[in-house]
Amino acid sequence: MVLHFRCSPLELDQEQLLDYLHYLKSQHKTPSQSFFKHTIYGLRYLYRIYDLPEHRVSLPTIAGSKKLPVILSKEEVKLLIKTPKLHKHRLMLALLYGCGLRCSELRHIQIKDLWMDRMQLHIRQGKGGKDRYVPLCPLLVRGIRKYLASERPVHWLFSGKNASGKAVGLSAMGVQWVVKQARQHSGIKKGVTTHILRHTYATHLLEMGLDIMTLKALLGHVDIQTTLIYLHVAQCSKTKGFSPLEKLYS
Image (cartoon, rainbow, N blue to C red; front, side, top):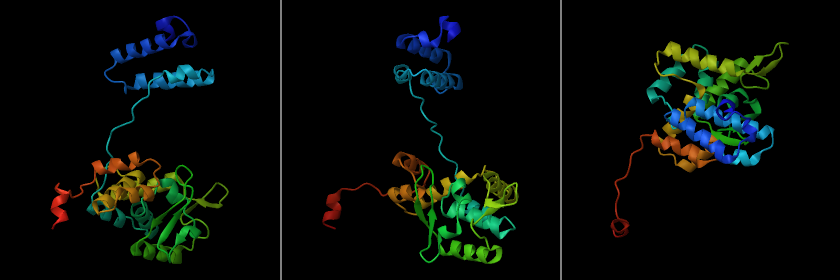
């Protein structure tokens, strides 16, 4: 931008700024091109440092990615969960899918968060600092009870050790390693991550008849638009359109 105008970006007015951005768009096929996007972000940062809010307002917004999430089939989920040899690893995969947990949420499950009698898991301070409850099924409760009896964890459900040997919550790398190993040994060709298991949880619930508002609450989403993306993936049976008058007298 300095080379283009031969002056500092701080000296440009809004018309010059937009003129330069239009020039960039003409050089690239779409506004989402990496160079254009990083120009916007760089300018936003520059104007924030120099407290020039009017310049930030004039900058265009960058549309987010429109990619649909990858999901696993029901058979692939069952294959993935049964693959690990250790019960602990099978339980981790079962909780990621069976409760739709984020990686950080799985890592920070405490023993006191398991409400076995009420068949619920208390998620504390999820994304956005919000608490929520997700249901546990009898299969998960049996698996958790078996794990508690054999491993006898004290504070964290799944724990690791820090440099001094003290027990701490399991690291993100540790969770990702379990998922990666399970995918490799299961022979599943799709890329599998903790978040893909969460996507799969959401899509399967919709296909099994759960309504979108309940799903929003279970996932801990703030904006319903985030949840609606799963409607594009789920293969829900659709009722043929009809007149309400038909039902009125039937």
